[in-house]
Length: 539
Ligand code: NA7
Image 1 (cartoon, rainbow, N blue to C red):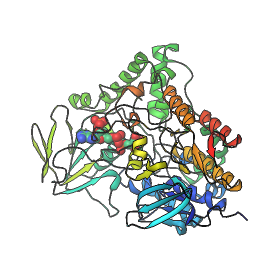
Image 2: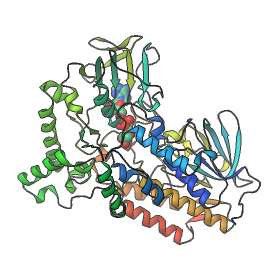
Image 3: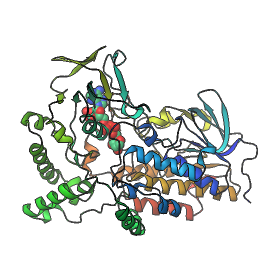
Image 4: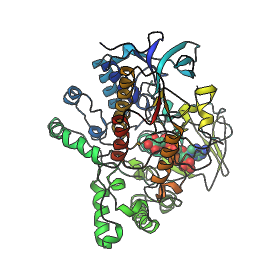
């Protein structure tokens, strides 16, 4: 049997968060014989897919490429009904995993972690929840997501509105209806776009308050029949192999040619085919390789997509407002849409460009712009997140000598392979800053396997203290910054560059995720493990 590496502590491992990272971590920790517990703020498992119940929430990655691969039985048993499953189906899948592996018995729900302090004299973490209950553990694993701390707009009067209001990622469990209601929505990111196209179907009236338009492209969702599911399932090994080889773990392979290698006719036919038939992120990720780096190439592609928007929106002025002016295609996370642009052709949908008529305040009865009072029964905030470091900042995490993680990361996060931080021994992060994100479950499976394998190694060697070395952190941080060089995505304001215009502390562009190749990342981390974790201080 496995020896208990922390007999005097409540748990060997505490996991914060029961989203995809947390539930897979629990599965693995149990398999490895650890005494582990998961603390979860919500009343159910699923993280992102638990909280984001807003209408139209769905995968933008193919369902079968996004699912977990760790259990062949689950792969055999679970059928996907759509190429891009909706949130209810995704949550059902997560609950299916929880049932099948009896995960809930080691998840403590409705438990929000307030603080986690490293206790140097005992090489353990002391965790406190917001009800004041304390827990001790040898190893702390944060599984808190990088888009999990929602932010409201910094508009005066947010608290004054008397109608129904919801942030998309804190959507209620009880049904919300839009029939006969005057609905307003702020935000046109990936979330806003998914919501708008859905709410437009039933709302009495929908007003979209747009500050920055986005380059949304067709998702091309569709049902998966039983027969097609069987064909897809037969292809699983090849499909996962493709994800493993790809740069960001997606199914889509990069186009090896540059835009300058092909004629205008050829590139237009190529884009036309991607736009009309390419599922999900294909147009974005399988684009000519220079579109992400070369301003000219990017402009040619963006102009081509702008014409598509013009063709789809009847009112020319509305069409122009929906075309991004200050960032090129693919330099922000590309939202996926299904009849999004056509929604603006409906008589019940109106676009208000708040760069022309700024929002002055939110009132008891709606939104006041510089031009008018828009009366609303319901106000929806699709205003995004305090991304990447936000969920860490929300907890009081302290390492050696009381050093706060928030202070350690002042200005910009610093990590060793995105999973550890110097000064914070025995703490590991799944989907922390400076990790390779991309197709998230692929990244999660790797990170969680790497972390839990490491913990098993430490247990077997009686190691109770593991800390990243400052030189490792310096090296990785520099490498992350180097890997991002040249990408046009660094030159825009978005959560991917650390900007949140609603938060005074998030006004400086930084590199907060690893944009080098995922296979390269895995190779690098595999070598650390193969080498006995010598790049860490071990005790
Ligand atoms: P995003 O992509 O951060 O989008 C937030 C949107 O909300 C964006 O359009 C913002 O406009 C808008 N916003 C935020 N605050 C305001 C104020 N004060 N006034 C007007 N408009 C505002 O969040 P999402 O939830 O859509 O997507 C997050 C990720 O989740 C996404 O990338 C996917 O990977 C899944 P702005 O651009 O700042 O002008």
